[in-house]
Image (tube, rainbow, N blue to C red; front, side):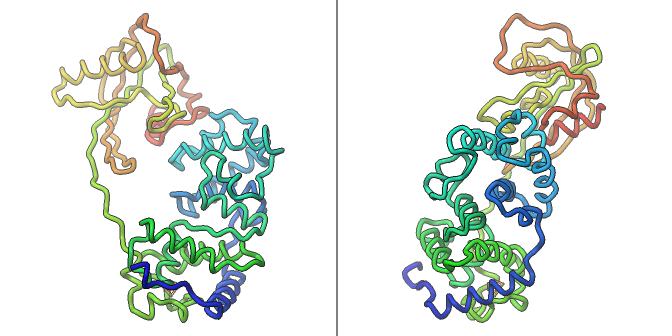
Length: 363
Ligand code: SF4
């Protein structure tokens, strides 16, 4: 289908830039990162906005910038401080890579981003989209961007009925993202495109009657705005049953640090593992074995405190939270870091979302 799509001509592009730019000047939202618009705040906000809605990001962004106003402050921070401020945003790898990149910027690049796209893209956690956003918004360098909102806008403007995530779709959409950019103030146009996608060209029921570029949109001309972009196949949901164990010892509870590579790497959590057994006696053994395997600690399992239900990517997790009493350590050296923490101090640790709910329940 790509072969039938032709990129717009100059007159179309000029009209598009003029209409969209004027609309953004009138309707662009006052967002916290737009008040500074420097490379550091563009970078932090764009990383936070990956997979997360603007409304949820605003508070996180302000707290983060208050704690780490400059790239130097971020580079000097402890990873735990960074993760604590990221807690609840999810996709914690983003926070760890942000921290890593801050250190690289300070150690090797004088605390600044290069103006070269490929050099920026070599930094941890920065892809073509984030690099394009930093360079265009902070430095007004004409680099295109393509993310969920702009993919939707361009797909509809072009009336593209193919898969926007296929190689052919991506090639076409990056070309379109490049074609629409003016040499003057490209950052303003990139921000306007994202805002149009978020506020007007919504995935369901786009508000075409309010759209500044409706007269240029092929999807509307063909009545296809509700059918494109093609929706992705829904992932198959998998049910998972797990246990979390609150082990007490002399007024403290046991936390373990989640290892690299797994879910919630770098965060602290209550010992947590899959739970298979239905029968109480088999379940008791499973709790004893699970805690010992993870932490090397012997316990006496207690009552079920609460059952929490939550989702992570395609998994729907039922988490049974149990109380337990510490009995003894084993001699085995364990690969995970553990810590006995007073309930009143749990607030100082970055925890998984369910870890925080358990901490609030026992505090
Ligand atoms: Fe999106 Fe409708 Fe505007 Fe086309 S006219 S870009 S479908 S909001």
